[in-house]
Image (cartoon, rainbow, N blue to C red; front, side, top):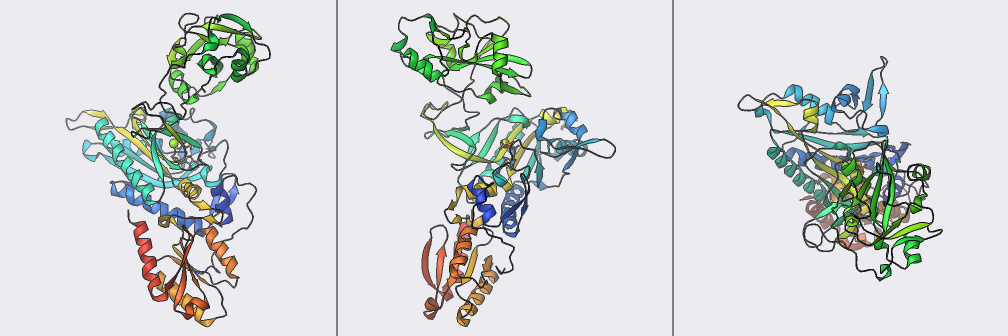
Length: 575
Ligand code: ATP
Ligand code: MG
């Protein structure tokens, strides 16, 4: 491809709307253009990257026996009503009606459609296991579409669904997919980690892992153990309860104390001369139409995912507003506590709170806190369970070593669904004794477009993108520094032809531009190898060989260049 002909509109300025580096660089390097919030057109280079990722994904799914299908984007509401998710999915779902007023949605995911297919086409145990997948657009009307391809409203996903005879066989499918995902992201040249995760709206009971591309800008926080293989999304990570150290500030103090104008736990601890870990943080929550008082230690944060799993599920879980706190507890938010409550308010205490025997909490009276409070004596929670966020440095739930924290971008997730959908939609088969059995399912998503963004988040510098070779839009760019020197132009053209013939995806920058402009664009786009043809080196039979990732420049004999490039590409793409 000639750069003069390529639709690759590069920008010098950082577009104001782009907050994260992948979004900025994809716009600046001319990979995507916005059509509407969270909805993009892929320009030629962007599409090439996408196709490369798709190709790797497809090969790995096929290698595990996956069969590619294509399901409809427009899905009938009836199927979603049958699974019970029509009402659960909420405003993220794009809903529409046809001319007959029948309800449809744009598929945010395809469990319903595929289970409907399988229940009509699979009869016998002989047809199982069955792995079906597609690579296709998904639609989610995200509350905050942002970060370019990272969180789109229309995005590309590979979704595979497994159908097995029994839970054991389903676990094997899960294991196979987990392995395939490791291969996919390794082959894409990305640094990633698989972490235990929460199942969210997809549900199921058999466990789930997220695949995280590690990057500072990642939306997700994960913890991992440096000593054993434990790794989990912080939403999911189990907390080990450890007693806080002795707090001399508490000695001999009890009863209500005046704490005027105290607004935060830190202020309270300061004011009383105690540790924050000696206080109980009480928060009034509302799950659908039910109020709950949640208790965690003052130095901890509530984990709403755990709250939802332990006490819900709720369609809507939120902290009560100050007016609601006043109505339910008759007191200002900052002074509420678990002692002496109206008996019908549900109280859930975190594991650590249950062990507190000399704590400080709100007195349910403006400007007062109560000291010397013991759980089990001064108040009895309705339930005691893990309700809080883990933090770095806490013990690993498996081996006790101090957990470390990292940030990641979720590029894929694997779920063992059990029979959640097959039961609801009656997807069954006849076993070898002719008896009807429910199919065990799994589902496995990869955000193909998000993977493209994640690759950039992980691989860039101040000059632009540094594509991992296996997913680079092209491998190599040939840059003649002048169009006026015949020898330079001829060598550039010959090299360009030779490289393409050898299977190296190569472009030639044939624009009549200054070398500086060409170099800037090449760096921005992130071609892994740039070959610069200039008169001086050429007089000695050499060209300049520039490696984008290391920024190293070498002079290489013209005759050796093609072989050298081929070898680098081959090594990078074999996994
Ligand atoms: P998130 O928590 O980031 O919203 P999710 O857990 O809802 O994602 P899944 O249902 O697990 O997403 O979808 C499978 C994969 O699709 C995700 O791992 C992610 O890579 C990708 N994905 C999900 N939502 C989006 C989106 N809005 N834009 C781009 N990719 C997405
Ligand atoms: Mg997910």
